[in-house]
Length: 386
Image 1 (cartoon, helix red, strand yellow):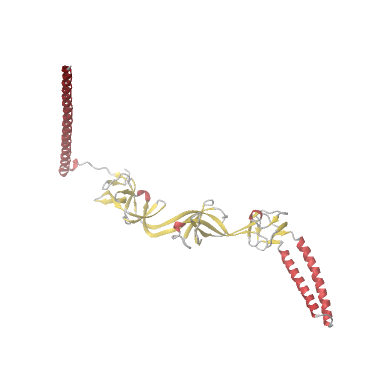
Image 2 (cartoon, rainbow, N blue to C red):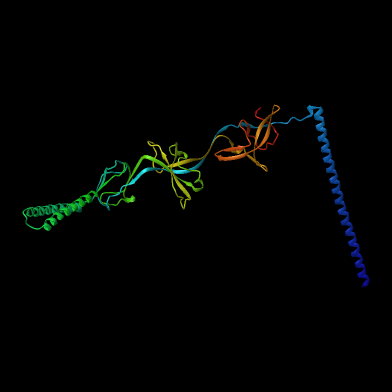
């Protein structure tokens, strides 16, 4: 039994030695191959350097051996000074300076007569509605009878007083009764006028939502709306972050999409508070009279908030960015050849497809506007199509 155990240990020891030997041989082979590979790479680098050096030496003595570089086709445009303007683009609506809802002078009443219909032209002071006034007229007739009676009593009392009959108190009382009756008549006559509803402004009866027999109180839902389109304006809501840029008198360009019409105007009114829900402030611009505009039409508004005369501006799509910042490529004439050159730029305001250039370009520079993708500094370029 002891001999068998010894024999097994010998076998295991022998197997371990063989395994270690095989593993060592494999590592040696890998190291040998890596060394050979690195040697070949070093030889290849040296060979490429030798080839490059020989090509340069050959180019010095034989110009025909130099490969001609093929220029890349591009399009260029001359950089010029022009007026650059930035606008705030907003939506608004057309509104009328005079939009009036007709109201009664008193508490209103039942409509007896209606003298206009929707779409009629209305003049200021024109009678529009006649309200029920039967009770007022009856009271007025009663008042007239009472004043006649009071005047008769006063006259009789005065005649007696002239004959030194009666007392002064009786005369004064009779006179007061006449005065009170006259005041009552005046009040009734003024109240009677309340039954006539007149137009306070001129314009068009845009809405007539009342009929004979209905009660008229002047409420917009059941009343008369008069619109005067002589004086129109555009109203818009401006975000509060522009509060320091927009002031009264700021130039504005207004476009009415439905009519394809454009007007030039200016800010005529700015609200003095910021809306709690909209976080903006209201601005108004007057529109010229005699146009075909109607209240509540959509308006596109361009508010000028920045302008520079003689500025340099370029298409925004020509600007590229690298680790040094923003740049463009220009075409430079060097020894009769067009070469692409990189220009680091500082940009300003952007509006539409044009961006203002603060520095980095000069008037007359030839900006590469097409074909600049993949173009590198110093590359040969051409604008010819053949």
